[in-house]
Length: 394
Image (cartoon, rainbow, N blue to C red):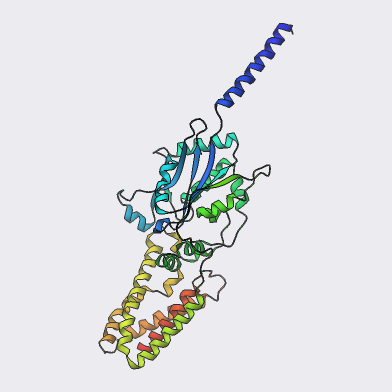
């Protein structure tokens, strides 16, 4: 090869390397973080929230990719909410705008900065930008398996080539959908007991770390333990963005089996004692109890047969809070007026008590895993006492 041509080739190679280095310097990778919002006081805020933040390397602008938006004014929102067919969507907005409501409500926010390489960071930023387009932004929301936190989890896992799921799917802390739901809702007791009574055995399977990441704070905890291929931690650093000024939910699901047992027995004894002296007074208390039990059972039956709320399918609490209780109301009214109930009324009382006894029997079977012992301990003695009082002979 002539000397001049060799020198020219080397110069061309050097020039290409310089241009590549210049291009790399001109196009640094975006900075990637996960922001986690602590639980709030409204019922849709109880589970916390999170989003992915992308910091543009040239302008320094920070964009929040938030999967948690819904439109209450859209047609059919309430019916869709009731039947479990929610539509959420992803929105990209400046971080300071996304955090404004959390600052106003006193909810704490922190960010975890991730150690993604250039390819991973650029791919994640590009994928989120495409996902945030109006034609791509909407998705079918499911409370436990496809929500705003699992969308963040899945986006990170895709950028990491499946490494996130690989490290989290085979591990468990023993948490369940029920324990997490009741724990986080506990500050609002009506919401906590609603989750507890309305959830079937679907909610009692121990979750992997991957599955429990439907809770943003659990995902934050798991990200702290994730390692990259070379052993380095995924999370470079964490920093608080807003202080948390609200009370936090308990660390574990509260247990109330003993109080439920004593409450059930105490009410049953009061029914037996009051029935001998003031049976009409007992009837006056039994009527709203049967009304509440029957309506609750009707709602649970509706969730099972007519909605997409799979967590309510096959709920054993239907044996304890049966819609049949509504059929007891006419007989209860007769008892309130000092008249004897019909034979059908007395028979239905024992049907209701018998179904509650079946719910108790199921607790001794290993293949019925629903965690509703508290409801059995509370309600079974009451049903038996009412049947014994108003239908001593069916």
